[in-house]
Length: 386
Image 1: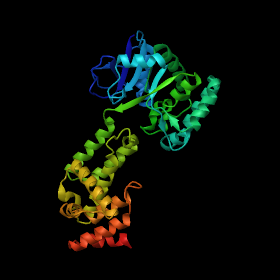
Image 2: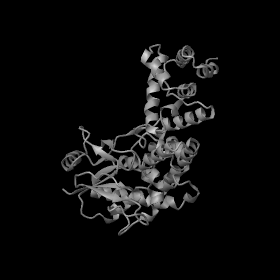
Image 3: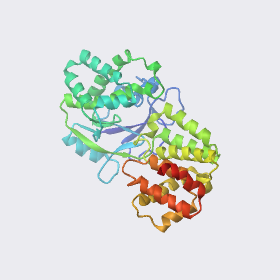
Image 4: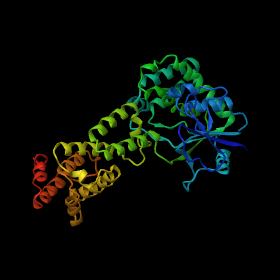
């Protein structure tokens, strides 16, 4: 059995050693050649990558791959894993596909219906347009479309592995629908992030298709081997600006970047969960500068060190809030010049449930600052305590 797992990428990455994994440079048309197989040869929609995302690679595989028995789609940082957290190999894929028609991602759970969930980040009307096209072209799929919109679960990333026959059938159905939807959506009015609408729309299509066709699916574990390239890019930019002591410029760039790529702060993009921390740190640093407080910058101008420091302070605050602070916590707060500004911002923005009793923490910190003669800090906390 010949298995090819196409790894969609738009950047250089550490290619898996197993030869079944084949890097495919999506959107290669008009861009720098990364040295991988590209989606701009043969039948291609590579030039529409800014609208279709990784689907330009899916299209290329559909139209140009002729000899694989099994076709897979994964990403440069997302792969199917076994129980040992290792990438699945050929034998493991073969064993799974003896009993299942298709391998997909584990179901993700939304807090609301998929239609509402989609609408939180994108234009929900676009999904309804998909429904209209399905009603016209494939009316037998309508109940499954409605069910998928009402339910809270979804697969993600267009990740799949299946027989060449089923892959061809799915792609034929998918692109027939999306090319018609394209005629009805004014994508030029969208920002750069949402212009990738057809990639976003396709993520729930796998679920609709497999349920309508009664396929037996194996929900595979997905390993995220690296952070999203754009997330890494944002962090590097912020690190450089902090090093240059340009905090105001860093905050401005941070929010401008998020306007273009709001996805960089998603959990699956920011796997270290540092973007929310960076946002707060930049605010704290700016507020301290404006009040002539050394605070964060007393320790260093290194963003990585600030993140570690932030998490150390959070651990201290958690113990203060439980009445379990130790002398080491008091010493850390004082020796690292943790300001009342940082304490206030962190307590106000802490994740629900992470701080047991914020008022107790504030009172304890007030006493620490007062005993240490840190007048600016204990006076700063007075308004928080009132």
